[in-house]
Image (tube, rainbow over all chains, first blue to last red):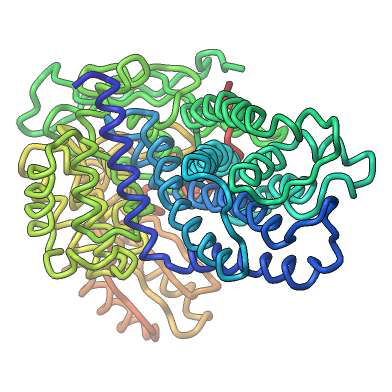
Length: 265
Length: 356
């Protein structure tokens, strides 16, 4: 086997292991889904009435892509926790003492996370249909939106891996994760139109990768997506999303691998 | 920052006196290993010039208290940690330059069972087999074989979370053996196990050694090193302070001890006088305990009991006790084994370095 084929084979074994665990720790998936549904209820029924959309349209249709992207972003905290847990339990040491590919522990984890989050996404979309979210775009657009979301979750998983490798405890992984992911998702167009934000936050929200992803998927699903006219990021959400995904991967995957190689405890 | 090679003179270890010892086949060789942990402004020299050699097919016990440097040594040899100075070879391979080749010939089982607790025993072993590049059917056969040998067949399809401490350790050891290693590192394989679990571990370790695997074992228990190792290296503050067979060490320490606990503190002086002919001993007023060497074994104990009776010393307890790690340390260093000088063997590890 070539080195690359070996790395792929090892990565598949590690991915298998990570997927095998999911039904055995069902509370992880259940809490992820419940948390998202809580946000749906909170925004669709509690705050939603007070959030008028410029140009009209259904707030619930506006909201759901925000919920999807938010959930996928938060999933990187789960990744970080899993990684920190593997470190603390000595499993990473075991892997590092094996003649396996150095990249496999990370690539196996991040690719398993894509599969796992695809499952979560299906459940959320079904919940979305229940509260009144609808897809108006073409099948090709729909497929592209899904692909975009899965690529985003892959990029976010690499951030999670890096966070998990940097902290010492599972608790720290959770805290650091929230510290990074909470502002990322809330200072964005996920829940409220960017136009309503104070001018200090507006540029941050406009260029935020979460906003880019949310806008791009809203457009592809045919959901309402109001943005200030003349806003470059608003008008180019799809290419901006792709650029963000590539950029995040290009920065965080090498950082995570570098961190993994230099683990010394 | 790298630390300059140790200026301190490392104690050269004598040649191992092992039956059937074959010259020049060193399975493990280290020279002047130094490892310094930095945490905040503090520096802890976990290893301060460790020289070791282990011949193929033999068992070396690294004996020492928590924080002596045992785990650090194992981690360097298992390619998990880089020494700041010195060099180490395993099966003739440099642990830094040929790290990946070293990983192919070693098996490591640590003090914290490193198996996936959400996978079953069988799944764990299959996974490690696959990562050693066995084919899927081969990995399955290897898993079945190991589960049988380690008495885990009945638990094979339960997740490891549900295993007892002893079963987890056996699974962990099985995982270390999946790749049929020439060389096995066991870091405190029985720490935290109950007596039954400990005996079970000893059995499986002995079986493995009988098959010719070279073993480096760390332990805090003289008894364990005695049971399993051909040769013992005593570690203290990151240095090897003694090396020899269990018998040689025990001879140095003075073999078994007679321990007497008197009922009345006032009798201590008389008890010491009664035991004086047996040689120097220790006397602890707080626990009312007098300890002396027992060169004559059980017969000497009988005589001591008789003499105590003649002297009308009332005793709460009297018995023959094997030397412990504390006795070894007392003899070799003049102080008892101190726990956790670096903390590297327990949970509060020093801050890891953000190595560039």
